[in-house]
Length: 315
Ligand code: FAD
Ligand code: NAP
Image (cartoon, rainbow, N blue to C red; front, side):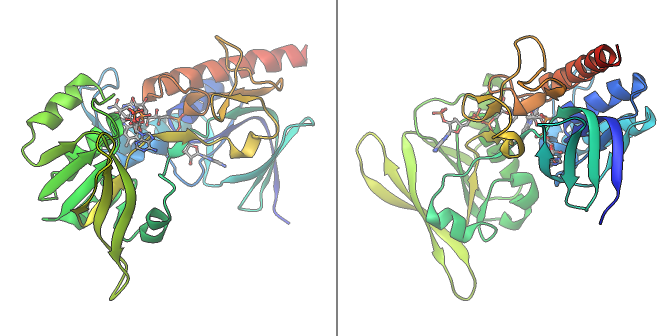
């Protein structure tokens, strides 16, 4: 049997939302416990330059997240490396179980579990995951020195991943299902100016092709032109999926109201979920903005909402 930890506020997740909630609730003397999950620091730890965090014209994503963690600890938050595998929200105190064996009992909970990369769902994608198929250029780009890679997607992530991959790859082809990116214009400008990058509009991926011997490796991608229906093989050594992110709401999907395809629903203008005492912040609740700064802002709101709610309970 693991130990049981009691806390006023349990914060689940260590992205910008979680750490900001920790800073605010620690300064409110609520002695919060923050559980980091399997990706301490969250999504920004898999990127390089962040250029839209106010006050810093440029900061490395992983550095920013280390600074946020230090800030939360310095204010008095307890930051633990554990992952919540089970959450009971039907009784109070709320109970969360960690895969370390620790049980957490909390008067209030702030959910900040963010989002995870979406995959295409192709059998070949599953087969070659980790062997030529990746959803993280920062993590795996290094393996494609002098090689040809394909990036699929048309948002900020796809464009940033493509630009980053030019540091290693000889050629980067961005494949997008329609004619026009949704990425910010400044990123698009950089992409179109880069001689190593080619864009294939109006194409979808049919299957990723590769070899199984002497080891699993990608050799190309079969693409369909959505205008003509023609299928052709584009030879490549690596395939990067960058088609967006899905909210990490698995823990609460049967307990809280969700909307817009799995995002936790909050009362407009607040972070209150459908269960009093449970608050949600960041990409977990936000299908529109999905930025570090908006997540941090919601983390602040969640801490203040939790503080006020706890004060009301104390009467
Ligand atoms: P996340 O950062 O997603 O963090 C979620 C946290 O929850 C993680 O720490 C995870 O370990 C934890 N967690 C999940 N499940 C559990 C569990 N069961 N138990 C405990 N913990 C759990 N935004 C910008 O503003 N500027 C940028 O330049 C920028 N670049 C980006 C580049 C990339 C490649 C990506 C993928 C995103 C980028 N974004 C950028 C978006 C930004 O990263 C997100 O909006 C932001 O990180 C969301 O913060 P969050 O705190 O909601 O969640
Ligand atoms: P996104 O903005 O949702 O874009 C996903 C892209 O993938 C879209 O272009 C979409 O096509 C395409 N797509 C979706 N499903 C597909 C499928 N099944 N097959 C082929 N293509 C598919 O996701 P994102 O780029 O990961 O960005 C997520 C959030 O993080 C955004 O809010 C973004 O602004 C933020 N972010 C910010 C920065 C930054 O500020 N520098 C960097 C990275 C991410 P359609 O366009 O046709 O829908």
